[in-house]
Length: 149
Image (cartoon, rainbow, N blue to C red; front, side, top):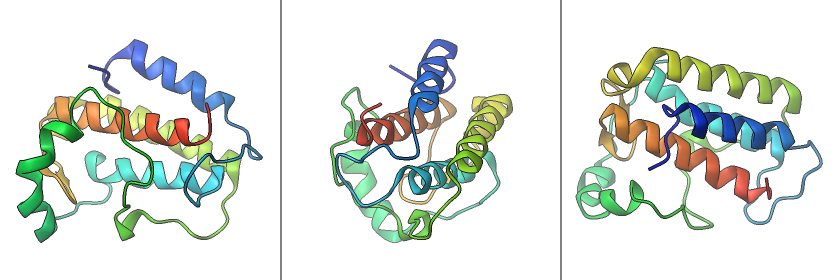
């Protein structure tokens, strides 16, 4: 299973990230490329400890039933709801956000899976380090596919 903690998987994502352009058109959703980059950075912040969060009540109820699907092999489907905390509606500097995301990915990886395992996901709650690595990969892959890269 693909993970940000796997060097080959991370390098493939980095190449796709480098191929993204500010004018790339989205295939679904409402974010432009710069907003998507900031959204993805924000999505990694809980795992690095930069944005500690608590699990929402709905997540506590639903996660036991959907966890294996979310963390499984299949890619995320289009139009998955976004936690309001991670919604980006303002315009963003594309290059600054791309650099920021690359830095956040490096930070996540350097801190390692043991550190990630201490973090709480706002919807899925406590995840193992391996689960964080897979979820982070799938989230980034989902948004890169959103822009065809």
